[in-house]
Length: 294
Image 1: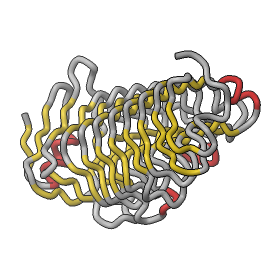
Image 2: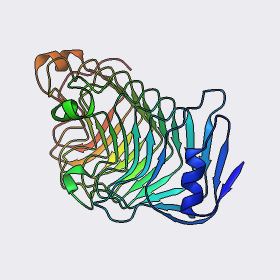
Image 3: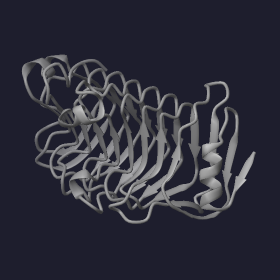
């Protein structure tokens, strides 16, 4: 067990972390931008934990990432608060990490981002609030992958294959862009059991935008949207396909669609929307494609 009480102690502990270690944050404010790079194992993860009263504060919303897991593997990051900075929690080339039960709030762009071939990570039980304070169009709650326009910058001009990530049981509101954005290039993830409130969205028209392949979107609930609940798009040939929607509830209360599969025939035919998805007050109906299955 390594107990830390200051920002310098925290960064030193991150730098020196070894598999199986527990780094425990005392209550208080840790100002700065913190980076973890150590690789642990599934059997011996590294734990970084604290209460909500332990606050990582990244300061100015046009600054750097508040907590950066850079190439880190099998970290379990739990319980504390992340605030300020350009982005709250950034995972680059991370494998098998678990981001669990954090409060992530008040940052310039998105709250939690998995990118640069970050695979098999779990983002669960977090509370996300008040994103996009720098630029509202970048104010997503949870963001997986990289837009194709940035692939040459991030992933050697090929897809950012941030695959098999699980986004589960998060409570997301106060985002200026989508609560969850799933980018082209990502495959085989799951988005389930999350709660979305889109009342603050000014740069998005749905809670969830799916552009990857083979995602399962299950048991999520959303309220307050300017247009649709969930959207599927194809921004690049071969992407936006084979996604499945099961048992979601969309409280639209407007002219939009609960699940809108917007794009060419290839994605409309490959998307499966089960008939147990529910849309309330959706002028455009539960979905714009035929549902099937129970």
